[in-house]
Length: 342
View 1 (spheres, rainbow, N blue to C red):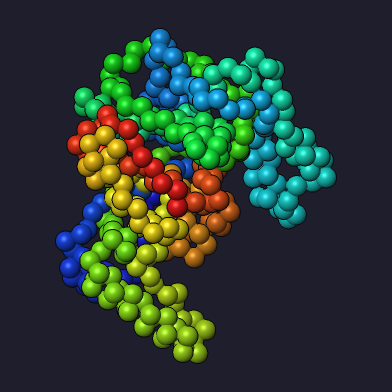
View 2: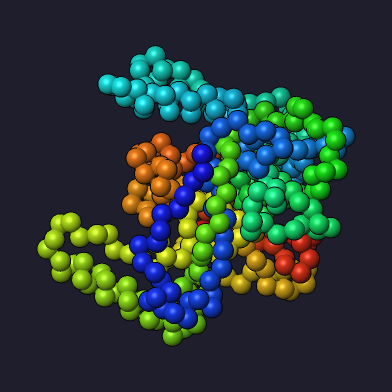
């Protein structure tokens, strides 16, 4: 089933015609629980990884001896999802609560496994044929594969994430690795994705307001202030929700490829290539949720579904329920990527 973004509550270019000069596109991925094939774009699905190529591993020196088992995390999610859908008495039974407690235990692995290379988690793979806003990779690669370490133990702080992006030419892969290695334990369950098929949809998007020309940004702010004042003075309980540029008219939430990054948690930060200095473009957004309860971006096909059922299909959590924006160099796709958490 396809997923369709509802029309925007207002025509933002009718309000601010100069925004037409800044209009771009982004491809919403619309992940949905399923059983993706190895030849499909997916989140948490099997990857088209050559059988004769080593699986990516984390070699940074950090402890990975203790954590939760991946199978326990998946099982816990299944039990909770079924329990809250149960009628007429939703919620886990006493027996299920006991099982959930057991599944939530942390385990310690053997010393050899704790000190050796740690297999990365295959997070997603994206084919250019499926996703209009996915650029070509180096040497015309058509497949982007995303990995990350299941522990927050990297960088100068010792609490950062490790992200590993690989480009390849899909037609060169013949024999596929049937059973990729997995970490025995996971430091943070938000790194474990549930298998999801994708329903890519290209939509219009506009830059974060703080990156627009100062006079245009000021006019947008003034317009929003008027709407807020009118809403405060209204006595009509049926008054429609306030429409905002940031949350309704410019940048959609959820997993997406291309377009513009949101800087709602921090001030905008220059993302220039560390190799050549070129301004980098947003490549991919990995989001903890597809929308919130009052979002105008909820697909038409899912309007009747409650938020807790449909807003977190991947079960991935970035930081404190944020989003991870990954940037790529437009001049040289092989240059190292950069990222920002919002």
